[in-house]
Length: 362
Image (cartoon, rainbow, N blue to C red; front, side, top):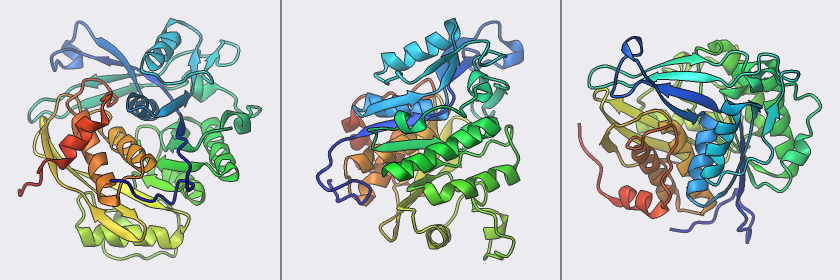
């Protein structure tokens, strides 16, 4: 299964991972109830970057999470949950009301779908602690010292100008230090516009080694780029191999710093049954994974499980086809776990799933 990985130095077996973003309180009505009928909510914590830190820590990767949370019971509870899953939280900032005036932990409400009824998410995260914190004098060089992999997403910069500047500083610092960087576009229309997301991602791409989440929109701005086929209208949500290969190659032509690009493709048969497969560009070739079909217990965090699976496989020098299949199997397995993160603590369970014949014809 082992493969030479151009993102890792020869003979370097150190695997120190760090990610930066917001962690939120998640409130979910039990038993698939609708929010307007609910009399109680189940509480947990999640967020894209936190989900990836949790997944990797459970698989044995030395994993650190940096965020800002209010110095109150909610903020401390979120940090305690991370630590209970072996995520290092030493750099986490517990902010005071003087530092973050609104002094709150972001929240989101999940109305879990069932059958033909889709799930629904309602955010309440405006003016959260990380969005209000002033990072202008923070020492990101010291924060990133000694790490080998940095993961960021397009969600955190959507929270405000201070977060956008923080993300760019981290990317530039990581490049100076020779740290492998991964970035997930993760477009959220409830947080910012398509144009704002595209323009910011354009600034990020020159500093990225591994790219996720290219499917919803262009990740660069070019008024003269006429494109071909569906390109000007966005990347197809369910592309053929040929379409995806063309998209990958155009990204790499423009950004030769990219070492790997990956995306998963979802086929929703109902709110309770989905199929997943993935495409990955790596070492000059596009790879297509198996197709996995499964019933859904909790869909939230499926994309993060895909990203964490691929990062884990790359860190462990898997062969390219094993990398992409492990990532999809990780995502499929997460759909059977309640909560935001894939807390599978045995990589063998994911490998066993990826080696099963889940290819189906529909």
